[in-house]
Length: 136
Image (cartoon, rainbow, N blue to C red):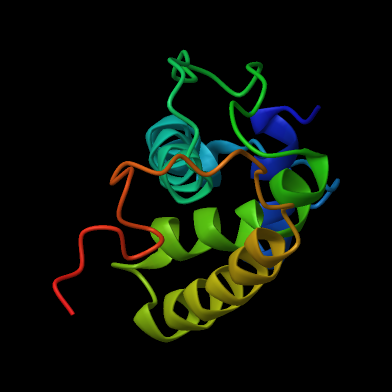
């Protein structure tokens, strides 16, 4: 379980926005703090769509909330890159492009490691599997 604040700190570290004492929240990053919950909600919804999760979930509202999708590996490994890309898209498109590419690589790797679901196959066409209705 990871908190949005942990993801924010990791993103600020990637963006070289940590304060002199190593703190992520500062007057320089106040705008980023305000934008972070919306970005996290968007990226979490994206992951839930890609994994096929259909259940309802509560959007995050602050840095004290837990990340609503994925596990800690995704939250602290891939999500900071997605957050950094979204926060920098207007200020530094080159860096945002790098972070976005890295996020997509890590997301694809994370998704490839999720186990497939198993289930019975239902024959919806009953009776034609042995050519019983074939005219030849």
